Amino acid sequence: MDKALESWVARWRQRVDLPLLVRWYTAPGEVPPTAPAWRLGEFDEPAVTVTVRDGAALPALLSPTLDSLGEAYVEGLIDVDGRVEDILAMAHALAESGSAERGGGTWSRMVKSFTHSRKSDQAAIQYHYDVSNAFYSEWLDPAMVYSCAYFENGDESLAEAQIKKIDHILTKIRLQPGQRLLDIGCGWGALVIRAAQRFGAQCVGITLSQNQYELATERVRAAGLQDRVEIRLQDYRDVTGAFDRITSVGMFEHVGLKHLKDYFRIIHDLLTPEGWCLNHGITSTDPHDGETSHGGGRFIDKYVFPQGELPHIGTVLRSMQEGGLEAVDVESLRRHYARTLNCWSASFEAKTDRLRAMVPEKTWRIWRVYLAGCAWAFEHDQVSLFQVLCRRAGRSAQELPWSRRWMYDGAIGSG
Image 1 (cartoon, rainbow, N blue to C red):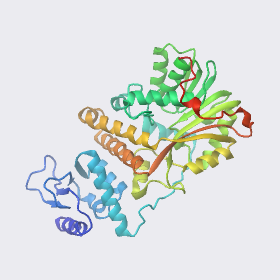
Image 2: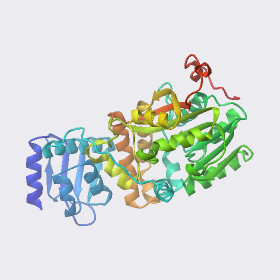
Image 3: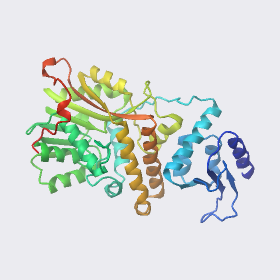
Image 4: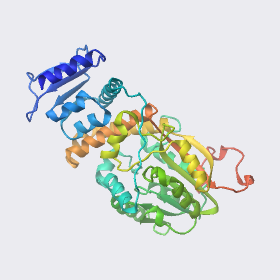
């Protein structure tokens, strides 16, 4: 094993100069100073130290990808010490160099496709969101908004930016008192509660997460909004009725590429003729709907978001039109999600001891890599996020505003 690592280090040092120390110690407990160690660069102190705890980690090191390195970490085959930002930088440098060695293109990206049924979608949602409400509350804002915030000026706290995001969405759809609002994928209820309290809307929020359903229902009751907000444990395909406004925030990533047209057709059918909808979701930056490069998407699919599929914004707009919706306004919030994820990751890191005590070690490692890795992906244009405002297609142009001023002149709601 020592010789294999020595050969690997010698080969890699010809291509990279990283402040990375690799140690070998497969016994339990603290690593003694005498344990074998190799340097992947010239440095006084390593920024990142990788300790090989199991020989099964060698394939991931010999031919590194983001998913193989991530898997080795979350399965406990390696320990990694250092600032999470430095860890991600090292992982990407190794994966990039490994891809070049294998002859793969830097931006080679695979397109995934899954069969989405009500049962499989519910299982996927519950896998991700039902870790525990207490776990999420430790590193999210107080309202537990688990989607991209809106930093209007760039100096807002995360909590302020999440409220601004909700108000930005509700103002974009021109929500008025008394209108019926459907929130598809309502999370822990922050948007529908805000819509009822500030904008005077009648709201229905749906989720497939049992934990989210229970806490959102409790929060509605605590706010005294039972007469204006209904939380349902329901699949979007089973919703009936007519709604003046529809919002979908961080949900259509679970729909599947092959089902986008049908998804938007369902929204079309649920909207009143004069209705408005806003779809807020993560998109691929690959024009062919490919996942993030170097295996990052495979890691997320295996450990974080089973069956998640990201469309390019072009695919989103085409699917909307095929589903009978006209896109009226498109806004990129990629920079905002990079900041949001950095806030989440920093909070996660600051509460390491508490979080590790709350969940299994593997779960803690998965979310640590996921949050920091996604922040890197948004920062480096691997993924993006768009808000798309739409309405039923085929309606008169006379119904459209002349400008986007209404989005920024202040909320339309009741104050």
